Each structure stands twice: as C-alpha cells, then as structure tokens.
Amino acid sequence: MWLASGLIAAFLAAIVFASVSQAIHPPSHLETIDPVTIYDDPEFGDPGVTIREDGSALVVGVAEMFFFEPDPIEVPVGRPVTFRLTSADVIHGFQVVGTNANTMVIPGYVSELTVTFSEPGEKLILCNEYCGLLHHEMMGRLVVKEVAP
Picture 1 (cartoon, rainbow, N blue to C red):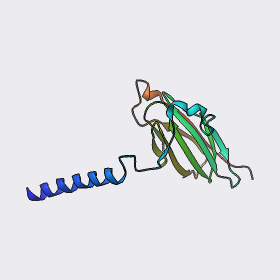
Picture 2: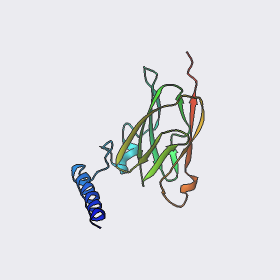
Picture 3: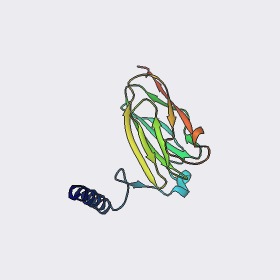
Picture 4: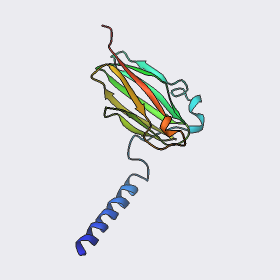
C-alpha cells in the first residue's frame, strides 16, 4: 500500500512540476498566432510550398474543418521538409501515414516539424484528432517527387 501511495504521490508531483515549469502551455514550439486573423497573416495568408536555395522545402499550411490547405502538397525527395502548421478553428491532427511525421495542430499556436522523405511517391495525410462530424473525411495528399538535377 505504501509503495502504491508513494508512486501516486510521485506522479502527481511530476504533473504539478511540469505544469508549473511549462506555464501550463504545450511543451513544444510556443509560437502563437491569432486564429481569427490567420488568412490576413503574411505567412499563413497564402498557404503553400516554397523550395529554399539549399533545396529544402518549407510547407506553410492551415488545417480547417474539414480540409488541409494546401492540398496536394508537393515536396522533393531526400531533402528536409519543414512543416509550419496552424488551425483556424479547432484542434486537428496532422499525420503523414507511413512516416514519423505526426503533430497536433492547435488554434492559436504554430506547430513546426521537419521530416526528410527518402522515397518518391504519394502519401496520405490524415487528421488524427477528432474535429467534428466529418472528421473521418478530413484527409489530404503529400506528393514526394524526384528533383531535377
């Protein structure tokens, strides 16, 4: 009994410590944005893919009931792809099926992740956070293409 009580106390202490030290914010990339004015924002006003000088790609995207923008997303194979995502309405998920690209897209925050896709092809993007009645219909396409030399 004492051991179980001690474990419960330790778990509660860890939760309290984490919430106080993280100021009760998501413990990830803490860049914020006003979800009401996303489409007036210079970065998120026109979601799309930009190929940088070094060959890497920057994908600026918005998740909204019940679609991802842009769709489809075309990126180069074998190059780092940085996704910068936000939501205009509710919490969404962004998962590229068959890869380790997976993040929550939260209104008011900018989620950022970088992935390198090693094989060309088409991949499915799913919302893996329940976002409403048509959640099961929320999907997009990621097209990984060979880069011309």
